[in-house]
Image 1: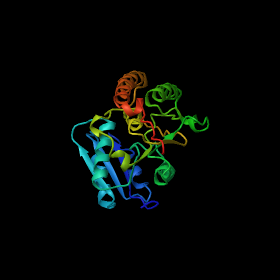
Image 2: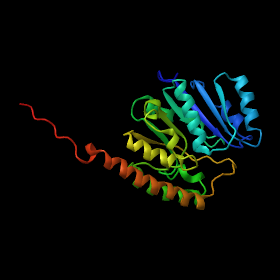
Image 3: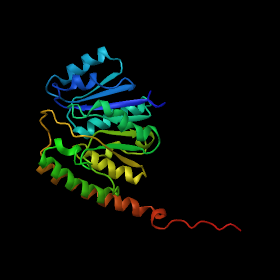
Image 4: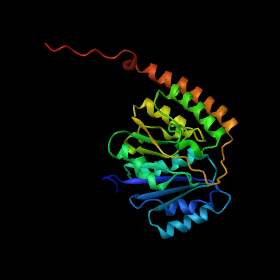
Length: 256
């Protein structure tokens, strides 16, 4: 328990045999459940995760036999967390790029009721983004502008940041089956959260890179994510416009 909340952490993993064991080991003790989602890895990721589950009773391994993408893996973890009645679900990558020492800072805005969704931000502070490759930073800045416009969250930065915490009360309002399955998951999630009226806050933290080979090819990723955001914009306009209360709020009755 953390601040009287049951905490689950989802760790999506695809071919992370070099890092997954260390990531699991360093999850803080206040976390109640650790959902390691093996997304059809072809290396030893699954075996390492299963071995860790024998040592730590908090670890639950979800094995996807067909690779679905990081978004699909996270959704699998979210579904399990809902079934086990967690109060807050955090997401940490399986590649060691997210510092477990700051997990409490990511969770705090949700645990304290200041937001339904908290996410990391590596780019607003120039000091925090020093460790980020220039091409990746450039891509993130472009996608920040696009995501702000499409999602309606004009203060959000670093939308690609997957270090997140989400209240399960907000999670239950989302259709997880219709959220983007690939690397644009976080961008799509922000759009969907806006439609259900969730409060979102950024949590600044330094970028961490330890020689991991990114599975994202940024030129293609920017184009594909832009396409996802275009579809999201059309969808969000349609949903909002179909709600007549949004366009034409009911007038308050005057007291006699």
